[in-house]
Image 1 (cartoon, rainbow, N blue to C red):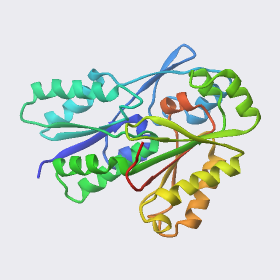
Image 2 (tube, rainbow, N blue to C red):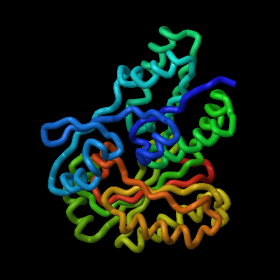
Image 3 (spheres, rainbow, N blue to C red):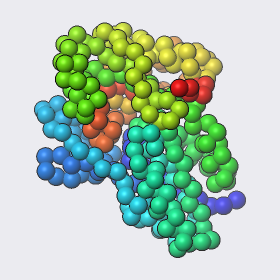
Image 4 (tube, rainbow, N blue to C red):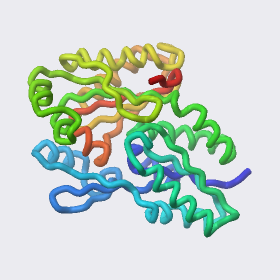
Length: 295
């Protein structure tokens, strides 16, 4: 069996302890805000609380993806040590980082022709992407080979559901995704769009609901409808939020009450600074395993 290391990007939005304890190196995205460049590094360069406080006050962070050279800095030490690399990227549907990782792979294969670097496009984001990385780690720990883990990920990644809602539409307006009028009236009327990720890993608006209690109930209904086994679902469930812990906790509480066979409690993480630069504060995202996504 080949010896390999799993790596990913910071946009998997998992706790720093997850990466350290499981020895999973991650490549950091970056963002510019208020004239300074920061790493997206699990809240080390700037706490999530401070980041979302600044965004709410009007700061407009501009993000940048990981470049090929930064990926080689992750890959090369592993290859030099005699191990192979399985790198899982943020969805190609929302970022070009998959292409950067592939360029780095090709460079490393020229330098280390006897080693392997395999790149998997997660077609996911935030802690949904993190849930896929976690499953890859579990498979590796079970003794699966590099090729076996790659095959499983490619065959099952579209079974990972991403559903999320937003309560503050300001960042959607700033990013050009909705008009100023829609943002103003939507916020005033407490309109909360419910979105998910499609088969290409792109974010798709599905429906709109008025009021937080209604959208929380609806996002849980999506899990009841699509989760593997329905209410008998017995896998892990993750939630991430951007300065919206109250509603993340409410969503988790309802899920834990209705899905009595969950594998452990619902894990609640923070939406990282790069994903959060696009969503802004007020987003809750729900991730679980289910039937294969459709358009």
